[in-house]
Length: 132
Length: 187
Image: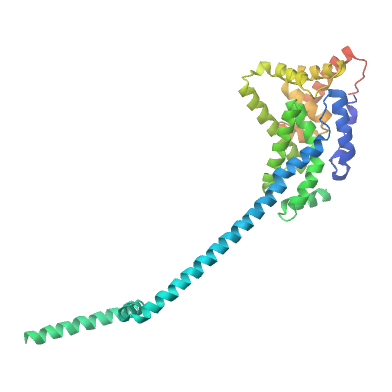
C-alpha cells in the first residue's frame, strides 16, 4: 500500500484507461478483498446499452411506424372527406336555394348592408303605395 | 484537453451521441463500478447503482452544461446515486446513524463477492473506523485517484478541507494497519 503513488493524474487521459482499469481492479481485489462474477463488465455493458442506446433506437423506430400509421390514417381520412365533398357539391349545384345561400357567403358586409337597405326602402315604398 | 472537448461535442451532438456514449461506457464503466462498490459494499447494489448512473448520464447528456469536467460530472452522478440507494436502504431497514458502520460490515462479510483475508478484513475495519467524511475522502483519493479539487466538487466541500481530511485519514489508517501487519505506508 503506497499512498504516495496515488497522486497521479494521468489516468484521466481518455486513451490510457485500460491499463489503469487493470491496476484499479487489482488494487480493489488485493487490498479490499472485493470479487466480481466472471464476465461481469461485459454483461453489464450490454445491459446498459440495451436500456439506453438500443431502447432509444427502438423508440425511434416505433415513433416512425406510428407516424407512418398516422399519416396513412390522415391520407385515408382526407381522401374520404374529399370524396364526400365532391358528392355533396354535386347535390348543391342541383339545388338552387343552396346555391344562393352559398353565394351569399361570399358577399361582403358592406354590399349586404346596401342590399338590405335597398330592400327595406323598397318595402317602405310599397307600404306607402298601398296606403295611398 | 482538446480530446475531451471533441468528445463532449460528440456527446452533445444528437447524431453522434450513441456512438460516443458507447465510448463513454468503455471509459467509465469499471472506474465508476469500483467507486460505487466502496460506497454501497455489495456487488448486487453496486450493479444496480451503476446501471442507474449510466441511465441518468444518458438522459442528462443533452443538459450537460460543462460547469465541471465530464470526469467530475460522471463521478458526481455515481456518488449521488449511491447515496440515494444507501438512504433508501437505511430507511427501509430502519437503520439508525449509529448502526450504519455495523450494517456496512455485516453487508461486507455476508457478501458472496467478498473474499477477504485477515489483512483485508483489518483494512476494511480500519476504513470503517474513520468517520463518514474521512472514509469517503480517503477512498476517493487513494482508490479512485481523484484530485482534491474533484473530491471537493463531488462532496460539495472546500478543497483545503479535503486535503486535511485525507491526510488525517491516511495517518489513522497507517497507524491501525501497522499494528497488525508489517506493511509500510509512505504518506
